[in-house]
Amino acid sequence: MKTETLEPRTIASEANTKVVSEAERLVARKDLLTREKELTRLRDEVSRHRRELPWVRVKKQYVFDGPNGQETLTDLFDSRSQLIVYHFMFGPDWEEGCKSCSYLADHFDGANWHLPHRDVSFAVISRAPLAKLEAYKKRMGWRFKWLSSYDNDFNFDYHVSFTKEDKKKNEAYYNYGKGEFIKDELPGLSVFHKGENGDVFHTYSTYARGLDNLVGAYNFLDLVPKGRDENHFDSSMEWVRRHDQY
Image (cartoon, rainbow, N blue to C red; front, side):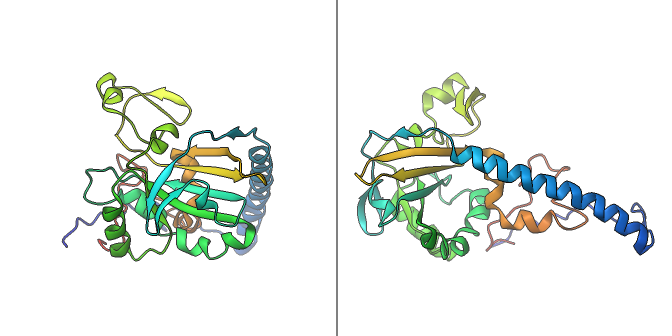
């Protein structure tokens, strides 16, 4: 399959970077270390506030099509009390999944070796029919559980899918605010808790740049001189390709 290659623009080079002695570099590095520690403490504080958010009881009964037949939202917890759902952009009439969501999804299986051992189940949900999801999953070589919400309102209720009426009005509610209609499907992540009596609660959702934490490759890129090197693109992930198209 022939694909376009985007060459990264040079940001860091010997010509535009200050070169100093090791002693001078150490002073600058220790200053940065102070900032890194501040960021770590702030991240811990934000995570604590996230855990303290109030919950909302899920009253709707959602039934999804999955590889093991029909499953409810409650079924997706398996034997655990916590569930993370990634809302993958894959519309019913699309021929393949979103390339940016695919970039994130390349990181899921590694994390999912460990999540069950911390009382967390993980699933991916899209509006495309199950057959399309299964074919694309096989193509990408992924193992995670992927289900279709084609026959229910799950994606609409959690504000990652949008109606023809939204498009007509050129307005959609996304990332906790009304804005211009962008696309009929957008990315997000939602977290749920199951109580001892079986009640399910929505505890958290995040969208857009809130999903950055899922992208391990970005954490690597943030360490190197050029960084993510995305500022010259029209959109931040313009350089991304499905991993079988690089």
